Length: 122
Length: 122
DNA sequence: ATAATACCTGAGCAGATTACTAGGTTATTT
DNA sequence: AAATAACCTAGTAATCTGCTCAGGTATTAT
Image (cartoon, rainbow over all chains, first blue to last red; front, side, top):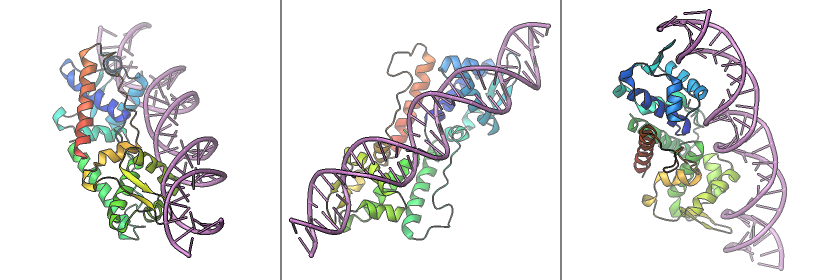
């Protein structure tokens, strides 16, 4: 789990789409202008959002992106994790070098924390 | 607000100190060994933790770090923010380029989110 | 006193990430 | 046919991460 500007951009853009949902698909250039984000950067973010099945695209003029599912079904955590490919390969990857209780304990602590944040953002 | 390995290291180390609190100050080399974190890197993190008044240091042999305040008074958010100097200078820094309602709205959305996460981690 | 311990500081560095630019291709509408 | 907008690929400057190295300085045990 990671919380950075990248994730914020994605959340902001998704929010923008949700707001203009009734006017049909929203083009990235519109979002870019409204939210002051680089168009090409948005394209990269939306590649991931599309792969995660959060948005669907319509090509050609008048096209753009629209939410793939109902806005209330989309968790903020999903959006953030779609763009922030989490490299959270915890030191003790699963079980291997959990020699002492200590390391397991702190590892568990952090995992719990991550999970709770994730469920909070849902 | 940012959640990364750096913050996790800090939280883990603070947790380690809290666990060994009764045995007096905890040396960074002990933490480094127990948690598998580079000593010099820990030193850098603790410089910030000390500046934020989260830990106090005891020099000399037998010295180390101890919690500056009661462990229950320390918010995880404080620890994370002490090391992850948040560059969260939001695009519309205060008021200047909030021309349209749109930008203000999403900005507010994100700020609320940040605040709620912060209060959750307390 | 002196050695050991452990905090403190700063410089540097490989690798990754961030935010962005540039320049295309493909699909669709008008 | 021409315009639009998704889609794709590659490159880049700046920053961040996690770490090493190389030295300090302060405190305490002997």
